Length: 122
Image 1 (tube, rainbow, N blue to C red):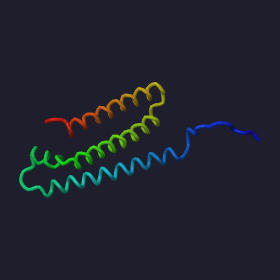
Image 2: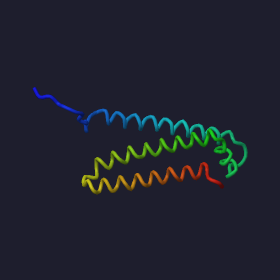
Image 3: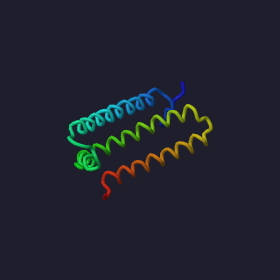
Image 4: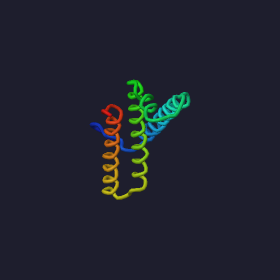
């Protein structure tokens, strides 16, 4: 019987899939609830819906913070999905790495754009 010394990281296992499963489900529920919240606000708005109405819906700081949280959830949701597809279908390591780096850069840019839209000056 041999002894194992030190920490050996498990690279495969069900726990990685479980975390991805939870991220996908929780972020999807958060996005669905947010969509219903915005839909209710739009449905109970009287008169034509223009820029002023949309700006009014997202003017409160709690709504900006909630929108930011939903965008973060959306980006994380997208990352898990795209990463899993890349791992399944992009077999050359260099291609998968290049693709994942490009996706990460794009998602970070989207996050920056979100901050600019929510808290930037109009």
